[in-house]
Image (cartoon, rainbow, N blue to C red; front, side, top):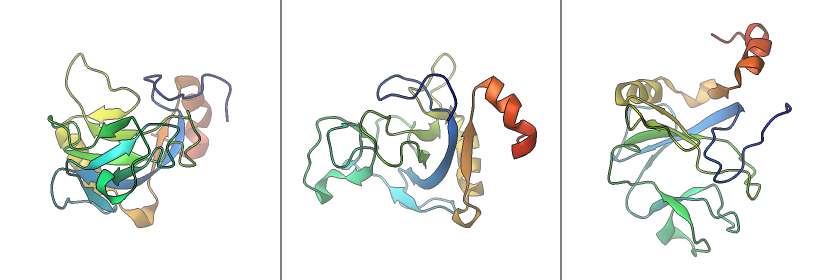
Length: 157
């Protein structure tokens, strides 16, 4: 851990650190990816209610007893979640520690995601296809000073 702001639920900031990339998700029945894939439909949600036992989990609401009042719809009316990757931030589901952090499709110029990392659709396709579970992929997301500090030791680009 480093000194500085700590990610909190609803703060709109992306978390800093090293996070496992654990699963992919999207609107298609299957995807070109080497990670487990969740085909989303209208019942699939990511729970962002920190009082829920399902906090920070992606699941089908019709598969469990719903105990949450707030969630992120995983099947949106736009293409932002057409294909995405789950970032294992707050994997222990510490209440209030932040939830539903993804790599996903970027809305476009002038827009910023609320805590997630977004990219052009073509880049999202390439990232999903490149990821393989046996490689244990991670996302390294650091403030500039921390990046400079760890760049050589961690062999970062």
